[in-house]
Length: 285
Image: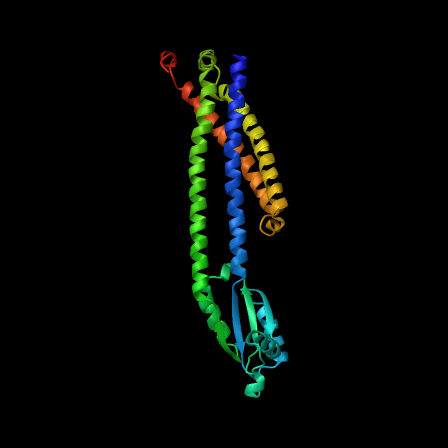
């Protein structure tokens, strides 16, 4: 009997660990995807073309005003001289030699905060920026913004679907494993019920044992995930830009919390099933 109980405990620990590793990977992927989407959105550039008579001093004052706007993440100023040098480099010749003057305009390039990098927000941002004196044109890639947001939404739906499916499968798997362990002691449960033990008293040892196994499985799963992340850091050091200590802590917390909650719920449900059964029914299952 003791060997059987030990085997069931090991089986429960292994199955729970595997489920928690998969859950941790999905949580990590979700956080990395969120951080990547923020970085992609914040790399989208809104260009403010300035009037020909806009001076560098006026442009600096305008940047100070824009800095306080909630949608601005960062900005950079491109003077007419910088634009001319860049244009000459691309064209292979200096266009001012043919025109007689610098044909390029100065501009301010804005990187928006991720929450504002969508076409709905960009419409009123464009309207607000156009109302500024000596701003002649606002340019950004509308199709690119729409495509980025659509693709990110699809990725989010896929991750949420996988997470929901994993929760259902994991609950069924862990519940069946715990139920097998409780099944082996169904007559002991009935005996305790006959001598007047309360349901809570009977459930207690089963729930505590399952929660202990869930905690051990969570620790093992966290160790495995930490090893995977370390290997990923060694292979691609730049992953730390979207996967830092905060994401690792959230993942570890989710794994431990899920390991404790799911095992406690499954043990509670499994013991209750046998507590509700009559003596004659225990021989029929």
